[in-house]
Length: 178
Image 1: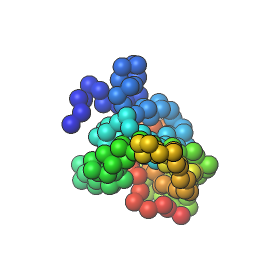
Image 2: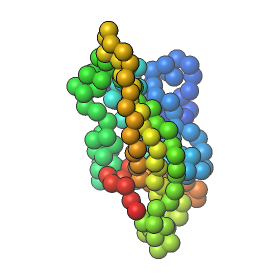
Image 3: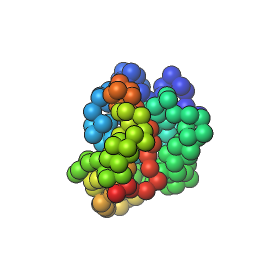
């Protein structure tokens, strides 16, 4: 477990904790900016400097406080499934692996528009798809650095004004919404 005082948050940005936690999510009321930052945190992990628990803490701390317990449990499980296990993480660390994510597009999918228009969600809760390129780079000891890139996309629900200010994470969908 990590020390809660070093848990990543927008309010915790001093240089000491910045060395021990992934980049904090932005304090913003723009759902596109926030969804893009969530995607970058999930798809741009540094396996050399951080632990899986750091990314899980970053994302679970970002959850909108209005989420009911059963939904929160399901959402945390979805987040956990997207973060490598400790064993896989250590294998990635042993070859100096990092991942970077470069956003190409952020948009509201049709299902998000429908949910908003038909009042399925509270006012201010929106769905965003974020697509881009994830690049993994690694260098086993004594070998030349290698990299691999792939197109990826995520559907991310966020609560922004008037539901929440600043924006907060509602969920990372298990599948990309159309």
